Length: 184
Image 1 (spheres, rainbow, N blue to C red):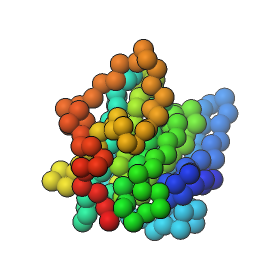
Image 2 (cartoon, one colour):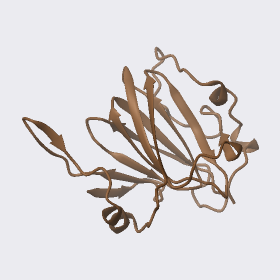
Image 3 (cartoon, rainbow, N blue to C red):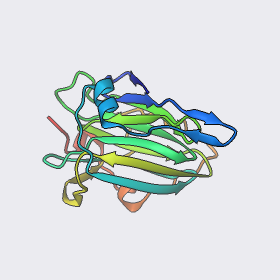
Image 4 (cartoon, rainbow, N blue to C red):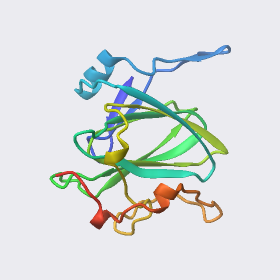
């Protein structure tokens, strides 16, 4: 496996070694020892989540506040998404900046998104199945959402003008970045 820090170095793109032949492929999607060796992090994942979305569905920008903040290790097992992480740690030199990565069932890439980041993704294929491990349990009372299209963040979602964005009610009601509860 190879680990590459993105423009915000705390967000890490993981590229597993995929072994394939005429029968299909095999790769180790998670190994705690390898993850720690590559990232320096000793994470305990406590929950796995699986979602399926159709083309144009945008989920995010979601996060949980302390004491139930979540780190996430995300990947796509079917389809393709644009995955986005926004640094919402006021004390960070990259506060308010974002990074993105294309994740697909073809490239098998994974993205590590630490606590203190808002996270979202846009489904680019007809459907996509998205899996992610979290370092803390879901706590709806501490879940927050920042508007995906907040003008101050200037996120380039690579949206084709012909693509209709579909949002949940929660995501349509996301807070403006300047008004959101964030991390210190």
